[in-house]
Amino acid sequence: MARSLKEYALKDPKWDEYPRREMDAVYLITCYYLKLYYGKRFNYTIWKKPGAETGPSLLQAVEELEAYAFTENGAPSELIEFHYTRETMRQYCTEMYYSLLTELLEYGGHIAEIQTPALAALQNARALFPEDIWSLYWMAFIQSETGAYREWLANFQELFANDLLWRMSILPLAYKKAGICAAELGDRGLAEEYTALSESLYNEQDANPAHGPFSVETEHQFDNAAGQSFS
Image (cartoon, rainbow, N blue to C red; front, side, top):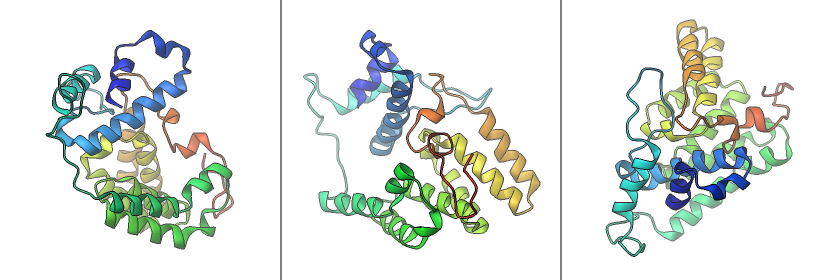
């Protein structure tokens, strides 16, 4: 993962044969998982606010990570530790799979049809591996599509308090949806704040967030429980 991201940062010619959409997807998803597993050792933020401190470039961050994660011959460093068993991670992946979201996003359908089992599976997944905030995002996503506005906003606000969020491919979409939720609850100020954030975020690679994984507003068109499309 780190090697692919470094090649991307260096504009390696071999990437020229791939569509921009695929390149953006690699960048967006790889940054998230490197940050998830290496924490402060991968000191890079995808999303920037205009006028905010930018921090290390992608290339600098990857090279610093390589110095920590790999020995001189390219083998994994003994410094690296992972605190979950393989069985725990297997259970986590199983719960995420049985949330049925993958099938829904792939083939379309109604969120209301899977709401109860999906939320149960996502809650189980979050209990197993709380550091990965995708389960929290999907809970908020389901609630946003079924009109559970207060639960939706509470989960989004918990999401926004997590520093890992700034490495998620769907951050602009999350802020946009949270703005819609706040408006539904009558909080105009919060709605305007979240909407403005969703429209102002940018990244140094000029990657389109719609090219990232699970950007359902642009990648998929299917009806929600109210019979309206996401876009």
